[in-house]
Length: 373
Image 1: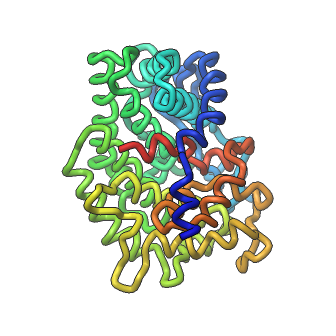
Image 2: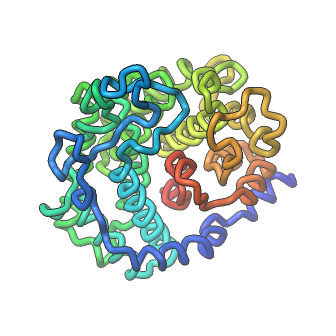
Image 3: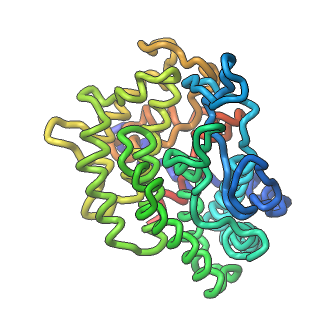
């Protein structure tokens, strides 16, 4: 009875309003700056093509002018990340403005969000091309890779933000169509280009992030075929291929940053379940025959989010002290499993991390956008 009463008393809009509105007010002062403002001199793409370089790749001390070599979990600060930072700022601002509009119906916030969306996705002079041809390149090895698709995982929340703006005076029919067309073109690229296909087949957090993006874009577009395929992938691929019997993710736990990767993959997979759920098919409660599912995943990780000193695996080689934050898996899990302890933990963790690496791996920032009908 106590658990149900605690959850029944929880009002997400009321809880989020005092956090979201100040973020949106700040975002109103940010002029749109798209990827055309910064060029990667090592990329063969145009100014409209997103570019990034693989994080864990470094010059080879034995061959300084040769191909880079990999150090898993160790980020090279000299690699090109300007486009990634600009994309994050765009997603952060659009998310805040759209979440605030959803909570207040203040048209100022909708106008600010639409201005950002038009600059990034519509205006010929500043728009980003709807592909990731040149993401996660490696000097001396390749100009782009399939795993670069993870660089746009923050666009999943942008797609849900566009849904929240529908019906506002700021978003006219032509602009809404143009924005949706951009997401439709990018979704088509994800489904047909070899880089997108490679990423969709990944059996770790990269595959999860592909499904999250495809699902969020398809929900915006009312693409029932893609939504059905994503539900199939969730049940037949993501859960059985990635989750162990105890609810952990062995591939993430084997990395040099097992804590951060385990958190990230659980957050994204629960977000996939939320986006794909319907009143008749709640994927947060879905279980395989052996009981594996999102609730078991939260059961595995929640104790270590509450007390990191109990973590039975090696500490992360970087950013060990910067996790956890207000992980959305706790909120989504609490609502699905009626666990007020998870809800209270979610409420007391920091909601807006300042560390860049944490923010990069925290793509679900405004839960009211995810839990809208």
